[in-house]
Image (cartoon, rainbow over all chains, first blue to last red; front, side, top):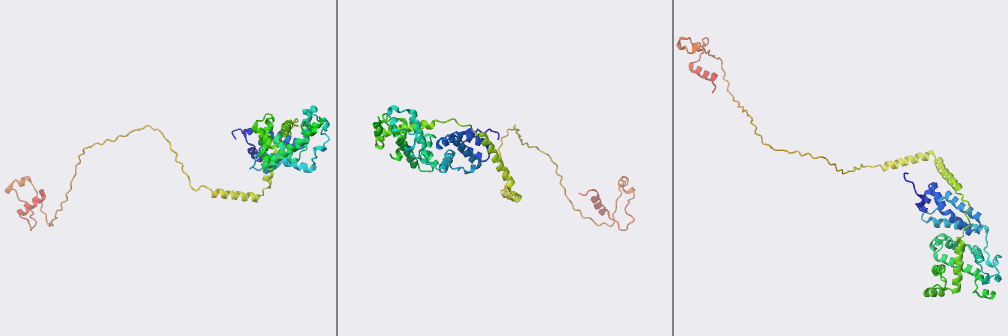
Length: 197
Length: 198
């Protein structure tokens, strides 16, 4: 080739095609584009376990190297890789038989006595919000993380999780309701909290 | 809350407090949820985005390992492909490819006519017509068929000026040897024939 190819200008799908033909530069470019995103997605989905997130992110690229032909060329690469990542998370949940207990059972959750509006502290609220997000049901958590961490559209999420857009909205709505229900103790306008005042 | 309205409510929650909503927006929200719920969910959404955007330091990337694995995998694939093909398959492939090439060989030669404009100095040739008179001599040939007389004896007079003009004094020499002589009249005719044909 007489002209140097600028890999940064190529689309993900073109890079994937080139990668499947053995082009290592295409692989490098895809790695730089997606490693960080995928790592933080796993980090959030896998209980903020950095080591496991790293292993999973590594694994997903190993899978890309070993079986590039599994990439469906009719799909967008970004949604496809998140689909693979979500499936890996699902398998991990099954493997660990993780039971998402209710936040009521969570010892770290503050007691009502501490939740007067005067004691409300942003840091505490955020800490418990983080815990509440961690303990969402997997199907709700996937949608919630993809929407508010990865900032994907409803349409993209529906493609990733393989559900209609209405289902995705419903899951997001349920996730939000679940979080607000479990964090209701922080709301001073709620009757039980008014009593605590 | 209707699921179809979720994205609209979500947008409002991320942008405005309930107090900041206009009349229509308030009405829209109050048809779905209470202002308290709106405010609480708004707080959760904003803080969730903030929490999810907090990212711990990225561990050391293992790109080098992956690159090495990538190269090893692809070199293995290429070498295994070449090693596993049996010879008979290679021969069959070569035959097949040869046949395909032969089948699709060009059956006609396409001549490409390319128009080129070449500028050349123009030399005019002027043809001038000139009438030239040329005199030629035409020789007419007339073949005259002369009847050949069967002459047995030809008397050739010997013309001797002296004798001719000597008249009677000179002896007349005629063919004396021949008994069949000619008369003078015959001689005259003969002379006419010999000397002047016309």
